[in-house]
Amino acid sequence: MAGFGIRPLEAATWPDFAGLVERHKGVWGGCWCMAFHAEGVGRARTPEQNRSAKEARVREGRAHAALVYDGPDCVGWCQFGPPSELPRIKHRRAYDKDLGALPDWRITCFFVDRAHRRGGVAAAALEGALQEIARLGGGGVEGYPEDAEGRSVSASFLYSGTVTLFQRQGFERVRRLGKNHWVVARTVQPVTVRDGRTAGS
Image: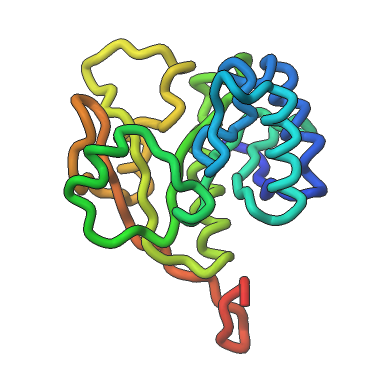
């Protein structure tokens, strides 16, 4: 992963995650990566409320992300979780229209420190998220990336990742969401330990 380190978002790494968010003024107007959780974000919620809710979720084990480190510094993340943990997604009406079964896991967003963009952080974050999903039991995984081929799109707006990024990790297009977004999916096998159990059991 290009020399980057990966750690899960948890109580021990919360200060690193919080530091990255604070350096970017709460991320996207104070979201604190809460937009896809049940609480959501909006005018009725302040950045301080979002921060408190995110920290509570992390300390209770109800928020998941793969954090990317460049040396001691957290420089990005990929958020993932089961649909019950991340029930809010963009293009929901189009998504529900042709929905079969829900996936075991969703990958909803990426964030990369402004000084490290276009340096492989998002790719490392996605790989790290898939490793964490494998450790937690594996299963069907969906992402909702944007097709940026042949288009000029600011890296700061590609919070859902690109189709190419996911395809490099074995995801396949399943169906279209809107003009440029897709549902992509793959299956992740669980990591097993010597006695045959999965690593998360």
